[in-house]
Length: 435
Image 1 (cartoon, rainbow, N blue to C red):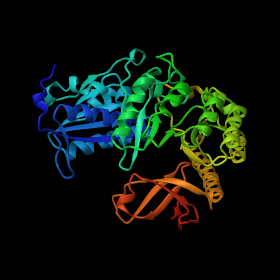
Image 2 (tube, helix red, strand yellow):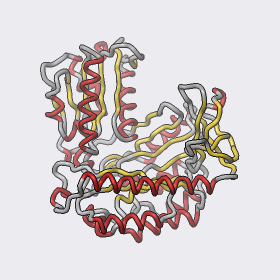
Image 3 (spheres, rainbow, N blue to C red):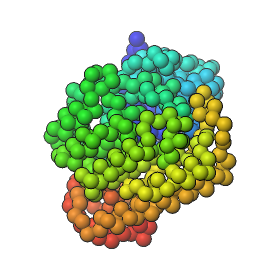
Image 4 (cartoon, rainbow, N blue to C red):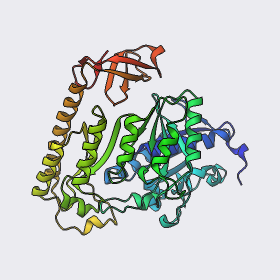
């Protein structure tokens, strides 16, 4: 057991890469250190402790992690350096060899960071503390606030799906979650602190309940009754877990926003099989059309990966046509990146970098068209906007319940307040309505 007096009057710097789940977990680590007497380093101060929470979704993400670690070490000479996150779980020895790194914490250790810091003694080589992925069982609820107004509530972690292109199950372990009671308690804390919007995050949030015998539907029903929270948004949810029951509930709920983020990954059934996804295009179309049937103004964002192994030109064209036919609002397009030890490496057909680039551009053009069409469909409608903080102080932004971006002159009194506006004209970049 470490004597907390070691941490008194110490300063910590944090850097988070990757998903909103990582940000929620960094926030939980920060709260642990704060309770031990560590304050957050101010701009320009050299930190005594550096915490880097890493991502490993692509090869580029791995490279960025290494660059960030070295940058933090250079900017904070002599600091005690802690590296955690997905890259730390997957490649701990690689990180431990970076000069200046003191400790590498795996997925099971990162949310009990205080007990692993070894009196903040600097080391010649980083110590690795990880648990084998199949033994990762711990779930620690965490909630973070971004630099604007939203809170991100971690409701689930890990994944049991093992899609052929993905390393997340190896980085985060099996699907697990806290209880509904714990999630409600976290939401009540946000409400007590004045928070108005919560985004539910996780690796595979629709799988909530695996370890507690509850369901994601029961979770959102319970959260909908927390007084003080104006809005919840459901982050990425697998189409096979987005039940019609959930869609219908969002259509009539008091607080859940008409905003869905659904990973498609490929618009070809043959490619979906190669990816080992658990649905086909017919099911995906049904989900999108069901949403539009019961919530016509809903915003629907869709994830797509281009250039995966096995994606022939014919399969891509099939997928492009399918995506173009859907009444969606925006695409999030990712270029396939080969990951070590994944089953996708056994697929023979490889897509050239040039073809990946061209296919990505094609889908981004479709996304741009879809977003403009969706925004145009909202012109003249009255919507509720939650205005956000802006460091620049010149203008401020906010989002409607169905994720339309709104821009207006900065007014500090509007920060974290909800105001009804009529959507009329776009700005020059066609990225927001002006009000």
